[in-house]
Amino acid sequence: MISFITNLLRTVLLAFFINIYLKRRYPKQYGDILITVSYNIVYAFSVIQIKLKNTQKYLYMTNPRISELLEIYNKRHIENSVDYILDGEIIYSTPIYSLKRDDPTKFDFIIYSDYTSKDINKKIMENIDVYDYEKSNINFILVELKTGDNTYKIDLKSESFDFYLCGNTFTKNFFKYYLNEILKLREPFVDNFSLKLIDHNVVTVDFEFTDKNESILLEKNDYKLLNVENNENNENNENNTNNEEK
Image (cartoon, rainbow, N blue to C red):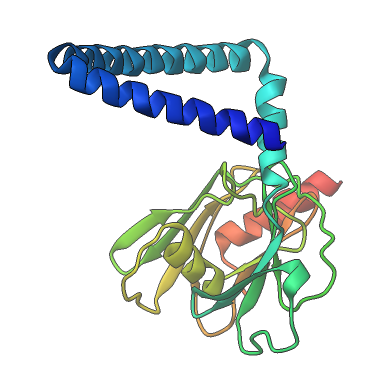
């Protein structure tokens, strides 16, 4: 180890003195050589960088499994976490291993994020309890939220998250969170929310969020509308569900 450090110091000192000698002895040639060498180094680095990127793209295209493994590896270095949501905003986030007794006691709901899963599953919870979950087979064709004069498309699954889990309940507070934290719409919202839903059976459901705590509950192979007044579309939804069971 000592001999390595000694040789390194000798090399650095030798390069330093050679640099000084050349600069003083051949000032014009030194400047030209320095510019040429610097240009060639930058050019070579750029070419190597382009070659490496092209090679990486080729490997990913011919071996998709490599990309999947790297994605899984990177996700595993992100700790699973919980977010406390109040009035549509994240008020506190923490990895699950550092949960404390003095964590927030006032919140609307909690979102548990599982970064070890391929789709980054998001479980909606009322309290910190069991982190186990089950994927739902339900995928809505369309979810649209209308607030005031604005209409927003709601994706419950993307490259960054998947909310299609059994037991997840989508309430007015959840959609406030979605607008604030996912769509990043930092503006005052009116209290009048309405939802349009086209479900997996191509049935359209429309309802307004009031003070009755309306919500959508996901199950394994179906969903339920909770505290939603029956209308023609909702009755059709129930009839389709009953027919499927028969």
